[in-house]
Length: 107
Image (cartoon, rainbow, N blue to C red; front, side, top):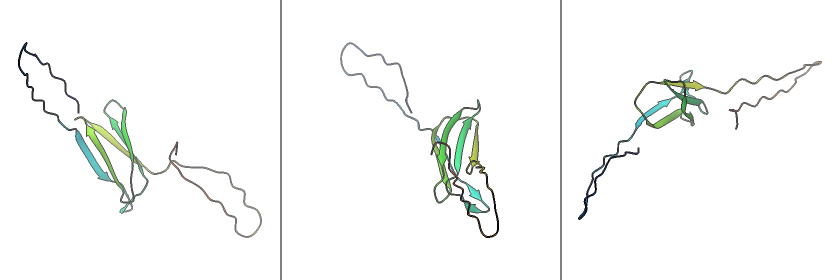
């Protein structure tokens, strides 16, 4: 995380300044559904003003992480895939196939 400090440099010699860099906070978690880790869930981090700070997609273990965060209040939103609606007409006897593909927007 960047830090800016005022420094006064003398006319001669070496001026030394010590600067301490602080890392931001981290949030780590797991998304579960029915007690099992949920793969490919979308996790969104929103700040107190309603701004999206970051998004993550869970892996096979359902894990997500947000790093380098400022202190403050946040909301974490976890979702599966957006719903998809398709038309379907069933005619006659037998079995009709109807595949549905789910995806996150923009992917």
